[in-house]
Length: 603
Image (cartoon, rainbow, N blue to C red):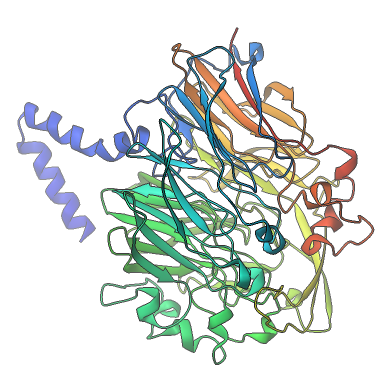
């Protein structure tokens, strides 16, 4: 079918007049243009990923590899909350918007005025009890703009819309229930008048879902569960997974012990991408519950995988499971970057995914076929991905068991990378991956489900991975060759997101508080600034009302990796913080808590 289509295109090129040819080229570029500037102005940053394809690439180049060493602080703003700052600042016209961790205050800053003073703030009445059921700090990953409104989620399970100009609440709907351990930390996605949101709570046995809300009212338009019968998962006659392992009726029930799917996890707390040409959204699903896999024999559909869904109806088109019968808490919620480019000499619609299980997946996003899967970090928990069956090949020597400690499993539960998003530069062709070098010891223990209490069933102690003791890396990955072009080692996990720019730059932060700019081609450090706390946020860059380019980042250590620093956990207990404390005992001596927005520009 593809070859036949290609031949038609060749004939087309021979027959069309020049004027029609220009129109054709323009139509080919529509997808790229829509992704490059979803809301018009190329200098804006309307959502955490900037575009629907999740490239996190900015076409701005006033700040570039020749002058970035002159970058200075333009203004700062205190968020008043000293917890993990994972949010992305977004910018629309002359206003910057940013959301705090709990209590989830939304700030709007006036970029037209010196120092960007507060324009307005919106303070929801977020339930304090939500803090007690937040798995891994009380974080929020940012707001999104659409149709004159700012949309975001609160820790206690609400999705809210406010007027972007005034901060007036337009609607507020409760979608989650903290009484069963359900929270919401993800950044929504605004698509075609719909606001897409998902829930958190896999460590409490919360059943995962994704919902589409009507942007004007908050009305639920559709809801797709991650476990259960096909009708709940929105699997119908148009569902065509590529691999046999994902085919069958009601696998969301039959691949579990009786009724175990009801506490099965699969939460949608990460990133969603959108292809406007196909009208498909792509989203991952989280880990199955509990962590102790002995309690849930079977593949545990539809957890630890990825769905392609119709954006209008939510109906599933295909699914692929990264980690069937996940045994390591390898949530499948990471970002997916959508690229139209050649693959082995043929144009393909690709989906690029640096997955928690340690493999960099290149997929055909039309079908869900895995074209390649290459380790981008140390992996010994599996031996590779069988491209014929699509199945991850597990290493029996690292298989956890109830009552037995299995040591030195790589990657650890947070994966080779966690939620912190990568960036792609069309100039270099590289994917820039902030990731971990962390392994773990794991013991399965009995888990009993009680609503609203932890449902884990594992003792975990993490440690530095192979090498000199470094626990984080930042890599430039060549998609064509399947290899890292260069890698920067960091003392702690690189828990921040990253951004790439047309100025031949990439930006990211480390958990010691350094915000850095590197040469996108060579990885050379060109500039760094010491912020007041560890950086785990998502950098963005925008053109201000004065016509100049700015770079923004939140500083404030926390999140799962920084739990020891913000929660006061005892570093002597290597299993604390779901095991992350074991790898982070020295973090409190390297940074302190904080909550500050830093914005930079050239003099």
